[in-house]
Amino acid sequence: MVSTSEIKEFLKKNLSHDRYVHTLNLRKLAVKLAKHHGLGLEDIYRVELAALLHDCHKKLEQGNNHSFLAAEFTKKNFGITDRKILSAIEHHTYGHRNMSKLSKIIYLADISEPSRKFKEAKHIRKLAFADIDKAMVLALSVKMRYVLYEKKPLSLESVISYNKILKKNDARV
Ligand SMILES: [Fe+2]
Ligand SMILES: [Fe+2]
Image (cartoon, rainbow, N blue to C red; front, side, top):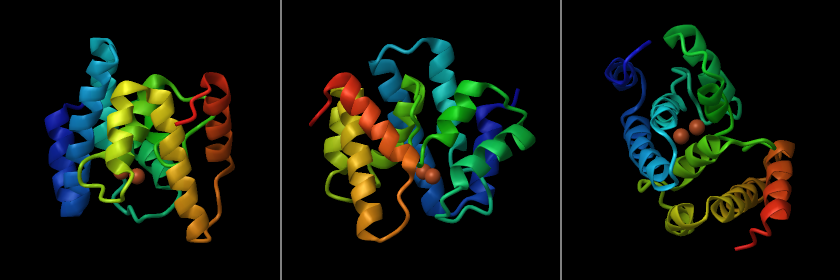
């Protein structure tokens, strides 16, 4: 399997500087969260790979499908077929009705890594350590509010994830 240093080399060449920094910040935070929440060694390695590859598609714009393109690209170009890794990459933009803990960690680290400057980022980051589902409810609501404010189409998958996590855990923040 491809090594993390090979992936990093690829990313450095193919991503903008800002996106590369975002990716490394995300990786650091996601691995911390994975350890904090007791994921096993194999899953911590999956978190690391998903973190590095979540925005890897080289024609990456802020386009809505980039998470699916990144998963496709990961499969084709890095030979990674592990479903947990590919799902975590796919779920990082809209969320998903059936997110694993691993996917939630990538979603939360993506939205709240330290280079994110919107006002709720720090709160989401802190909450992600205390309660993953509460952090997910806050993160999804912040993202959907932003999408509505920008008058962009809202992903039904985000609404379903939000409702599901909220209902299951009474995870109101
Ligand atoms: Fe992304
Ligand atoms: Fe990202």
